[in-house]
Image 1 (spheres, rainbow, N blue to C red):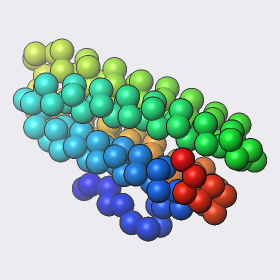
Image 2 (image 1 turned 90 degrees about the vertical axis):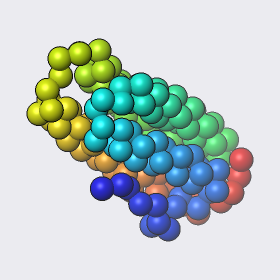
Image 3 (image 1 turned 180 degrees about the vertical axis):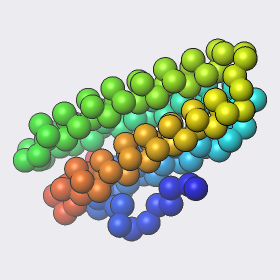
Image 4 (image 1 turned 135 degrees about the vertical axis):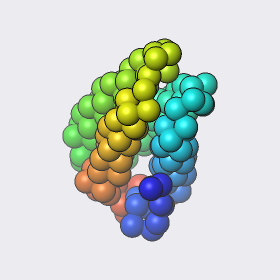
Length: 142
């Protein structure tokens, strides 16, 4: 089931919210591609796009936080580093899956469940627990 954006995920900064929406869209696209494991090019494309978008987003978010002396900057930065490490694991799982020509339907399903669970917990949990602390702090600063 796709992650749906709603106002409860908004941190109140249009630029950060747009980047969050993009990442959610990429997670949803990757989940859809995982339901069609024969579309291996799509899997690689979406995981690569997600990886790059997350990396760029974290850099942008941290720059904003430093500029506004966000009191939870270090905690958020540490969270970003952990998230990127987890995303590296997910990317490796998907690349191994894509490169294995003999993947069974059951292995495809297991990979899909594992990746989907990691990504949902990974990103939504981060927004709700860490990024919400930015709400009202930076408004729509770019």
